[in-house]
Image (cartoon, rainbow, N blue to C red; front, side):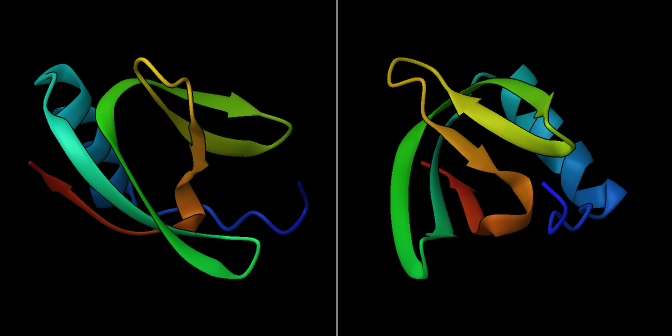
Length: 74
């Protein structure tokens, strides 16, 4: 994914903290040019094809880190 923009280390640390705390979060992100919202617990942070993603538990949704606009614990 050549258009992936790495996220700040502080943001990555925040995501890891939320994942380790097993907190349910509301994630606002942009996909296909539209703002979307998903809710779930971060099960993992993975790298695939040169981009990083969070994986939400249950749904298995993968959200690219550089497309996340906001993430808040519920």
